[in-house]
Length: 64
Image (cartoon, rainbow, N blue to C red; front, side, top):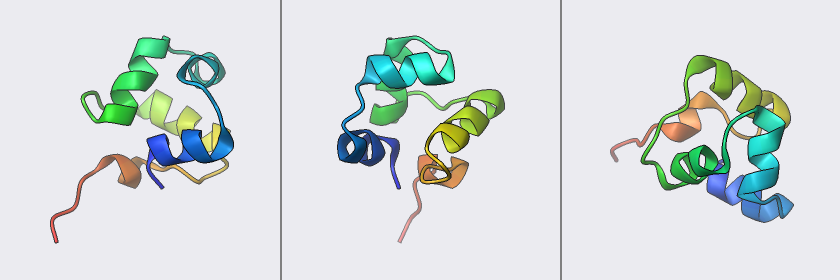
């Protein structure tokens, strides 16, 4: 599941999610838009906070 989809589904704001994973709101905004890729430590936090709904693979675009 994409981060943007998760945040919308769970009605979590960028600011709240940023607080949960220990980054700035702007970073979450960039992760959602795909203009920034989280480092390993943050990826791990994202996976933990989302209970595995969002993983590192969800940040990688796949060609069909």
